[in-house]
Length: 472
Image (cartoon, rainbow, N blue to C red; front, side, top):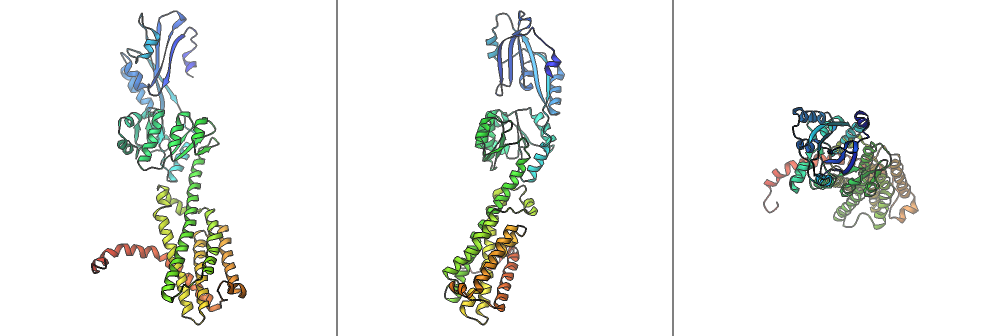
């Protein structure tokens, strides 16, 4: 379009050239018109670099450049001057241009993809804060960002501002930045490192060779195979093979679902075992001997930690309420950390409550010691399977493994020879009713646990004040 507007110029002969570099901000060439005329220096580049070097700049030039940039257009300023007699082309190109004659402005429209607004919106809904890195003018970058879905008050930081700041100031500037404009290729690495210093988990998406260092430094480096360089692809942890970046939204959701499944599987393993240990200690204190034998404890792990836990680990939650709660929160605080510890604690307490209730019911109803032990075994397994089934009630795989494990346990307990081999005894209707009641009591207690914990946190300081100093 530029060549069509300018027309053919067969008389121009270039003698020397200076390619564009981001750090310099302009490109230049020296040539002659008609091949024999006076040597002419032609400069094109960023308005903030070229326009100050112009002598007699029109009053409206800077205003027009800002207005075009504010409309989301990329602006290139063009200027020229005739070389004086005795000036060499190489010497002129080595010096910063000055005393130029303003020629005009080129405004280039870089239209965003149709899917870009949906990508920005999807990332925000998934709890990811997108940040624009661009070499464009700050006003251009801000206008494009607003068109893509950023708010009107989006925070813009420039590469020069980052370069002039120390490490602490850079992290503070980038903590809430939405757009980083006029950023040089080597400054992209600086941006990634500063965001990480600010406590962010950083994903860098790029397709150029100058993005490779930043992609490698990010927590998650994403390369684009369709139009990307080999350097960017090789440095990336994740490569988008197509041309539609909307798959990144799905990747974030899949990753979060995977972490939720892993966290739930960990809670099943650690929480369940912690509850079994707690019941074992409590039963030993109350009864004088361990309520479950070694073979019975191994049997518990077989029915609760094998197939049901594996099914949970490979099944995503698909819980819209959980996804909504995670939005806007880093993965470490939304899934791991305190939420995981709370999940383990609740599961352990629930398991111990169900097992203890069934064991006590067995002790205080007519029957042998082996009967109460068998009731405790069934309650331990049943409470854990009920919790697993409640957490993944929509998963057919979890349903099959949980109900299958429960059926296998019932069959083992009710088969005389196999039951005796594991130190159990077949149970009657009263015993099974007590086991079911203990499981129901434990699940009801699990629902009440958050309220109980909040009450303890709220009233414990006041109660502690009334206790003797030695007890505190």
